[in-house]
Every structure is written in C-alpha cells, then in structure tokens.
Amino acid sequence: MDELKVVKNFRKLQPLLTNEKLKNSVRLLAIFGHNGSDIIFATTNDNVYGFGSNRFGCLGLSTWDEDIDKPQLNITLSSKQLKNIYYGFGHCIGLTNSGQCYSWGENEFGQLGIGTYETTNTPQLIQQLTHETIVDISCGNRHTLALTRNGRVYGWGRQTFGQVGDGTVCWRPFPVLVSICEVIVSLSCGKCHSLGLSITGNVYVWGLNDFGQLGRHRDNDTQKFSDGRQKERAFNPYPQLIPGIDSIVVQKAMCGPNHTLLLSTDGDIYACGLNDFGQVGNGTFHTQYTPIKINSDIKFNDIVTNFDHTLSVAISTDGRHWAWGYTYFGSKITAPQDLTKFTIGYSLPEIYAKYSGIFKTYKTIIFNESPDIIKIDPLMKNIVMANKKQTVQQNDCSANTSNMETLAMPVNNNNNNNNSYNIPESAFLKRIIQFFDNQSDFDLVFVFKEEVIYCHKTILEIRNKRFMKSMQQYLTNKNEIHVENRYSYETMFAFIRYLYSMTPDINLDICDQLLNLCNAFGERELKSLCAKILESLIDLETICLIYEMTVNHNLLLLQKQCLDFAVKNWKIPLTSFIIFNNTKRKDILT
Image 1 (cartoon, helix red, strand yellow):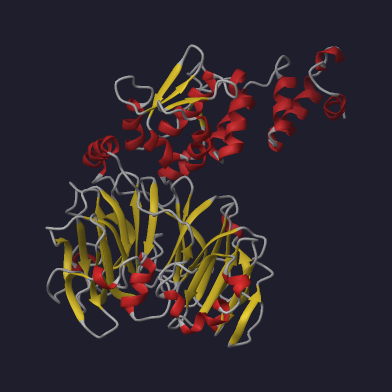
Image 2 (cartoon, rainbow, N blue to C red):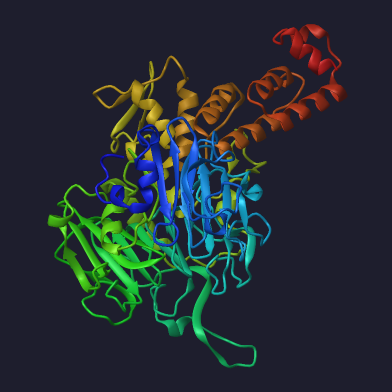
C-alpha cells in the first residue's frame, strides 16, 4: 500500500495504515459509503476485514453496530478467495475466484439478489447464480448487473426506469436474464441506466434516458400512461444499440450518474447525456442527446467515470492525465483539462479520488492488477468491423430466447454422422472461424510431431485467459507452443476450434483428454458437449470406457445413465470389464 499517493492520506483509513502487519498484507482494498465512511480489505492469507460507519450493515460483519473503529475479521467472507468487491449506494457484492457472488447491505429494492427485500448485515450467497461462473459485477445506485464467463448478463434490484433490463419496470429481488443478442464482455451501471459492451465493440444501453444518456433524444423513449397522457420521464427497459456509431469499435464504455463515456479502438472518446457540470466534455453545459467526439486532437487509452459523481477522467496514449466535469475545488470543467503535472505517478483510482473530492475509490483497488481495457489487435478489429455491418440493426431479442442462453444448450443433429453438435453461432463467431488454423494469417503455432495448429494470441486470450497463461510455460521464442507430450493433436485441435467457433468436432477417442482440458480451464459448456456426445455413444462395446470417464471427470448424471444401461442390457461375461479396477467393477454390478 505504500505506493498509494492519495488514498493513504484518507483519514478514515488510518486504523489500517497504523497496523503494519495488516497494511503489508493487503491485496485488495475497497473504500466506499458516504464520503469513504466504510472500508473492506482482503489480505494475502485470504482473511477479510472491515471497519467504518457500517450503515445498512454494509461491512458484512454480522452486526448492526455503527462506527466500528478498528478492523474486524469478516468470518463469512474469509477463506472464500475473494476476487473483488463491488458497491452501490448502500449494498455490496463480493465475487470469489470460483465465480460465486455474495451480497450484503441495503436491500430495500432487492439489489442484493437474494430473493427478499430484507437488508442484511451478513454476506449471503446469491443462490440463483450458483450455476453460472460470474466474472464481473457492476452496481448502480440500487440495482446490480452480473456478467458470466460466456457473455450472459443478469440483472436485479430497483428498476423504476427499466435499468435492470428485462423489459419491465418491476423491481427484481433475484437475478433475471437480460436478453442481448451478442457475447457481452463488460458492464457498467449509472444511477438509473445501464450498458453492456459486446465482443464486437457494440454498446447496448437501457434504463433512464431523460438526458440522452442512452445516446438518443429523450423523445424517442418518452413513456405514456394507459389513458394516453405523457409521462414526464423517458426510459427504455430493453437493451438497444446506441445509434449513430456504426463505424466505431468501442473498447471501453462507462456510465456516469446520467451520462455515458465511450472509448474507441482508435483512441477517441465519445460522450452523451446530462452535462450540467461539463461531465460530457463537449465544451458546453448543454445536454448532449447523441454521442459526440470530444477533443479530437488527442488520442486516449483509458476512461473512467462512476455512477455517483459527475467527474470524468481519461489517460491519453502519451501517458497524460485528463479530467472534466465537477471537481473538488468547485470548478466545472467543460472539456478535458491536462492535470498531469499534479498527478505524476498516480493510478486512475487515485486521480479520480483526488479530483472528485470524495474520500473513496470508484472501484476496489486490486494490487498488481492488470489494466481492464480490452485490447483489440488489427486482425480482431477487421473482423469486428465486418461483423458490425451485419449486427448493428439486429437487436430485437426475445427475453426468453437469448442467443447466449442457447449457446450452453447443445442440440443433437441427427443428420450428422461425425457426432458433432451444432450450437447457434453469433455472427462474430461465424466470421472468426475463417481465421482458425489459417497458414496465411497467424501469430502463434501449436506444434506436434507431424501436425501444427495456426492461431492467434489475442483471440485465445479473449476466449480463455487461464488457458493462455498456462500455455506460456511451453512457449518458445519462435512463438511455438509444444504440448505434444501432454495432449494429442486431435484433442488440442478440437479444443482450440471450440475457442474460435463454439463448434468442436468431438469423438470418443479424444473425449478423455478434452474433458481434462475442460476441467483445467473452466470450459463448462464444452464439458457439457462432451457429456452429450458420450451419452449418444453408450452401447455394449463402449459402456466400460465411458463409465470410466464419468468417474474420472465427475459426470454424475451420465454415470447414472451408464449404470442404468448396464442393469438393463448387460448379458456378456464379466471379463469384458477388464479395463476397470475392482472398485469400478463393483459399482457397476451393484
């Protein structure tokens, strides 16, 4: 924590800073609440502590006591491998390394997602998300969005203006699926509006649009009462593409309270929404109803704004720091202003803390964290731009039949004799498959004895970071990866093809190694596909081999199906069980 320049001076943080043992072990730090009134931190030995005002029980310490002046151990969250903490006005969500979510604090509008409206001071597991692997959370004022590993979006909490995104204005005390027709890679919540950034660089927005924060004039979203009278508020409860930016590939998008910032892959910032403090950055205080490019002479590589403040911050490609909107010294800056000479060596959270004038972090500080910008290389950008031309108008999704929901549900194609399963592909995946194993376009090669697989580092990094991180140990200085001693060419070909297109060719011979890869790198959908393939192949000749796989890879449902099949059909000598050890032979006989 010694590297902190602004945050370490927060008065509320002193009980932690004066405890050398705790201070030196901090790996993540969240400072939130009213003017930084509450602090939660996790240590390298997986303990979680909290102290502060504890309004709404937001410290999660299982007590309603207020003004807790020293760090107290959080028994519920400790040893849970907490990865991040997210916070709204009075509620918190903790995300673990395994992708599970715990919530606590204010719950008047169901923003905890636990199925009730009762505020709680003890972290509760969000049961309705346990079947998913959550990779990111965003909290608005009193609503919450969650992003799954395979690009689905769930929302819950208050949605007077449809900010949860399920097409209604009903408060949701439990997670509901938000229907978006693309793979989503990041989320952001404003005070009462929300957005999702797709893997193709499209931005979907929903919720309140009084000030054009959805990128279109409020007149497009003015609602009416049943008797025909016009309501005063403009909002849209369905995710829709921001219009007018068809030619732009967005790499980061963030919501302020009532404004929106977009950062393109070309380094340009576009903004729209309420501009009473200059937070849009268009040089005026006029509301900006459509996205406008700000400061066209400068290229940027990061942006920040937050649901609870009208400050906007950016870092340009030359490393300079810029801010606009309302600042702590009372000024209203209407266009990006260079503040670098005052912020040398500052991180984005610290720049934001310094100039917002509120003594808290806009997000949890994770020490040694890599930047959260989604880098798109020239190859990816070309694919994305081609895809945007097709998908920009394809945003009419049924709330019950999301493409992403279908991705996890294999459908057997009886006309296909090679035991492949067809999964509905997005336009992006259809285009990206042409670059798989392409000898004329690659920057990474998997080498086997007599075969090679041509692929791209960026694509594999986006699809499965754990896989790429693991493969680094086999990487040579020629950008070659040698894993022939661990996996067969056929297995690795199927796995990488899946990462490119979600459509692997699976057969019995590679299922065991493929399941090993699924377990090692968290590919649940591919594991489900393998199970479906194995189920279709059960017969008297294969049952022993398939049963062994179900035991080795914990495929419990398929294991039961094998046992049921054996009981009904087994009529040949016991010597056929030669591949099993005594324990497995006993299992299947009983």
